[in-house]
Image (cartoon, rainbow, N blue to C red; front, top):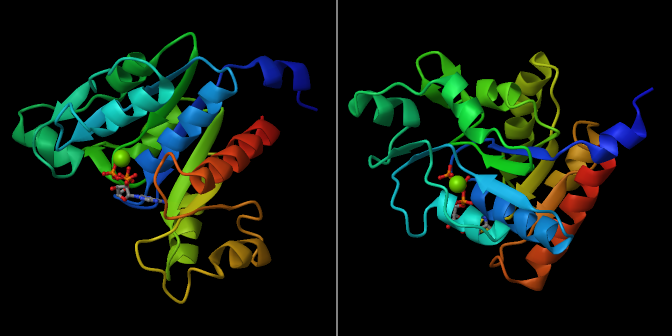
Length: 226
Ligand SMILES: Nc1ncnc2c1ncn2[C@@H]1O[C@H](COP(=O)(O)OP(=O)(O)OP(=O)(O)O)[C@@H](O)[C@H]1O
Ligand SMILES: [Mg+2]
């Protein structure tokens, strides 16, 4: 039986992954970071790899602001807004998994946002799944868009994570325009037994009370998973 006391005192190493790019990882990561800080956690929120990088308003910048610390420039920050593996290749670089892991190393509590989707390549030999596994996360948050196809998107990621012995807390982010899948996806993930505790985030700004409510539910869910 897991030692509950050890689990509760273990440092947070939350890795935010996506069922795709642009699905709401930064939005959810920022909301969660702000909620954890509100609960007294001293959190470092990092984005080790970012393409299309401009410091102001970057994912790294938004995460740092939400966690209440200075911007940590990504270890691999690429100007070009293409897949990180391609941006790196064009820059004459290769993303090294060991380098990402050592850049993320901290003795404190940590939240890491990956770049793109779970299986997006960051080099010819490494995907975000490899990064998530190598970071030995205390929790993984899987973000998908709450639209038709979300059941598939979530399931594919769950199966990929499961191959590495990993599981994730599922979050569905409300799309700009709801579709026929939006109202039922959370309930269907439970019905199918795939993600009984999936959490819906509304389409609302970070500071909105509805976003805060979802972030509270997410932080509570992660606490229960420890
Ligand atoms: N629930 C939401 N409510 C309001 N806006 C949202 C929500 N989810 C995402 N967005 C907006 O949609 C856009 C894409 O979201 P976000 O940047 O969080 O995605 P991402 O998965 O981090 O993307 P990337 O793969 O580029 O890192 C952003 O402008 C973000 O503010
Ligand atoms: Mg992002």
